[in-house]
Amino acid sequence: MSALILHHYPTSPFAEKVRLIMGYKKMSWQGVTIPMVMPKPDLMPLTGGYRRTPVLQIGADIYCDTSLICTMLDHVQPEPSLYGSHAKGLVRTVAQWADNIVFPAAMGYNFQPAGAAHVFASTDPEVVKVFAADRQAMRGGASRMPAADATGAYKNYLRRVSSMLEGQDFVMGAQPTLADFSIYHSVWFTVVKVPLLAGILDTTPLVKAWVARMQAFGHGNNSELSATDALHVAHDATPLDVSKEVFQDEHGIPLGTQVIVHAESFGTEPTHGELVAATRTRYSLRRHDPRTGIVHVHFPRNGFHMKKAEA
Image 1: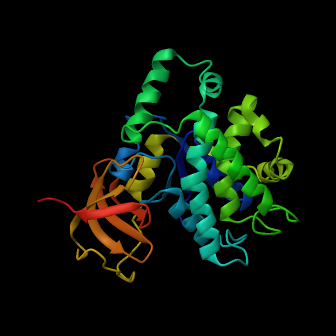
Image 2: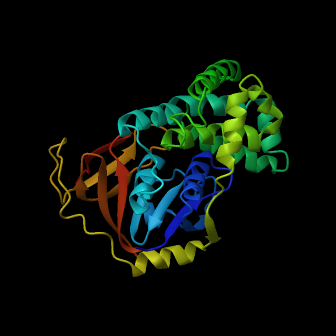
């Protein structure tokens, strides 16, 4: 199998989720540092439009959204498992709660005025304006959760996590699961990126101790790769054969059709391509770009919409 290439940037919480999983699994990987905001000229040839961070590249196969990326990492290296002895449905449900409910509250808290000032203390004001406009566009113009509401919600969620940790080292038991990593990346931003606001954890000492256990996994064996080299890797590789995947048709759209896939919220830029697989869990699109050759771009079904491209 080709090397794992993670397209990310250091302060991305969702990228930290994946980096820590690769540390837990003691995986070797290469990192391509991408811009925090659009344009992302060396990422678009790979994804065809998808712009959220991170993106996992394995040869000429491009995996979007951390829910699918984590599934692939567990497939590439099954042990230690991200699910342990627990029912996958329970782990995935807690992980989805963490990604979709806890994260917005955490970031609303983290980016209150004092937190934002700390994060951008050494950043040019014009760059800050560009970042703010970019994130507002990703939210479709919706405002971030007000700091007061976010603070109350975040405290509540931290208490829930603390109750999950009573009598055990991780939220599902003695070993970490995807649920832990999905909760962790929100708290990581508070502890590592806005430490002046980390006092919110003082009332949940079990969560503070759990953070230390999670941090100890590190990021695995990683090295830097240039964006140009990553594009060359895709160009020189052949995507995985998905022709034998079981086709689950929920749209009345046959394989071979030109389609559009986009996230249902936050960063809804579309990706166009030929539908080459639609399984019970993901969509796969075949695309061609002069810089990459033929690639397959993969999306999870949950959280993404697909429709037939207009002629």
